[in-house]
Image 1 (cartoon, helix red, strand yellow):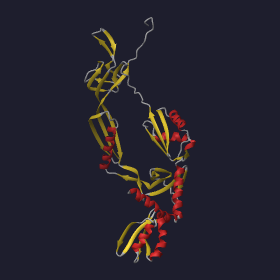
Image 2 (image 1 turned 90 degrees about the vertical axis):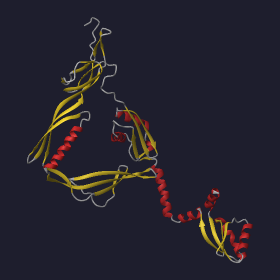
Image 3 (image 1 turned 135 degrees about the horizontal axis):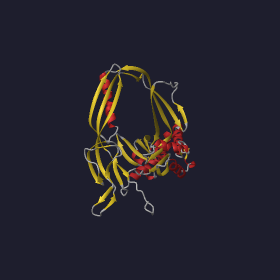
Image 4 (image 1 turned 45 degrees about the vertical axis):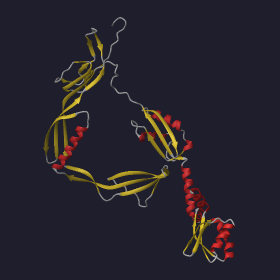
Length: 400
């Protein structure tokens, strides 16, 4: 049934009405003469029937023979739709030109996507590729993806593997970065645990090695806490171990925060001004008539929008430059506001090193006519354990 409907749509159908005393005879005659008739019905004293578009002209002799009146009621199907739009030459030409441009644009690179990078920024990778010839608007057949991938590895030693795939108008850059080996000694390397900084030990947990410092003792930076040189009572000799421990220590630290009560700030003035540019490869065309006004003091933001049709990037994009005029003003803030700013800076300072925790803090506040000053004495707690390899002196054959 669905196939029949599809065939009728492609061939086109005409529904016509028949008026007269011999309407039934007319329908019988055209059926006997091979003219397909379907969906025949009688409504309000009038017969209706449907035939294919090409057969409709063949019914004229039978109309004259039976003295009936026939009028077209409806037309359906592809021939009538096509005839309607073929008359609009401009629309047809525009669609055809768009499809041609879309097909041609698929032969060029209009977008570069980078995946798999962490240590090397996407901007750095794209800049390297652009220096080697992979730019937006470049003809795909003029590119050598293998050579570009090799140049990418040579310019960035952090990248161990790279591949460039040209998919449609998109250059997909896949990279794998090297796994950097940390500075900590390997598990088999003999080492000591020393203090990464000075402080007073509040807890010590030894996983391997000989403890030489105790809880409550003060240590300076670089001093030995757990030794990797261990005397074995069972074997009666000295052995070297890979010392490992967690050493929590408290240490004092001072910080001073100053917030002026009179500050010079850049304050927005007026509304947002948008300047749009059309980017065609390296060509940048302004989409505004007014002259772009330069502002010595202004807030600026830049957005780039890639234009797509059905997910396919078009060979151009639009850049929007937002300019908010501003001017510098000298403003006075209240001591309460200055204190809020000082507390915000204090919080940021404490979060700067996430490995340590604040055990205690003592704040001394001074307010003058010009500024507010916070003098803060901290007590921090942190794991100060640091592994250092044991350097072995190999003697020569004479034992020297």
